[in-house]
Image (cartoon, rainbow, N blue to C red):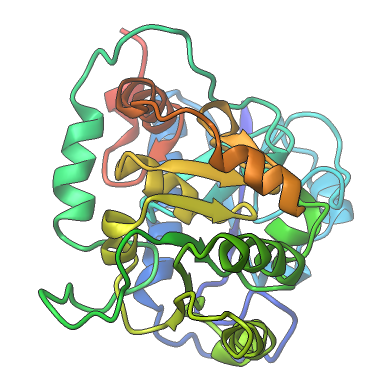
Length: 327
């Protein structure tokens, strides 16, 4: 089988921009993309396939290129079928919030995947959930570098609900949600201030400028909150926020998956790759109020099984391909 792997050039922007002749340094977060390509090459070489890797800036990859090269199987990064129409025999790959895990799917990534992980009512069969809690949470790991865990003085109020902000124009909002980040944030603020429930909102660590409109929504609400704590944070670890919150409300952030590791209830306004163990709601006062009235439950057991299946259905770039080959 002839296999083509399109590899994004990792030293330049994924969006259209300048392309220096000489390659520069690769940011640590993007090293995992390099590892993914190497893992796939190893896998297909072991299968005796003919493998070709073409490296281009992401924005230079086109459906016509894929069609002209006419491989038996083509791996395409950071795209989805609905916006990158291609012939059959393609797989789209994408980095997840756990940076060494990559999804591979015939239709897309995140909430756009054809094959979503589902729960099956069985108990977890491995200790993956606990292993990731030990490695990921206790080591304060995330897709982006996090501030150190603060033993005191974090500024977080007691008994709060948590809203992690996303980049307003990110593709996961554009493709996998009917609602904007601002719309969802505003609705959660309305609910929290009406009932006097503390709310913590965390800005996204990338592109702080895009957070300005969301920060302004919080600041305006603070003036009308009648004493309800509304806290905007940037220099507090995501894991400190998740460990101390009562529940998480998100559009469709990868933080929702991290919240699952923390055993927290997650309510989402958009589509995700963790739909099976979270509840979708609307950005309205009544919908959020209804979610708040859901009887308490212990999600750890279904979470453990779901997370186990989630990890097993993704490519772990820390492991080599033959670990998963059929014997």
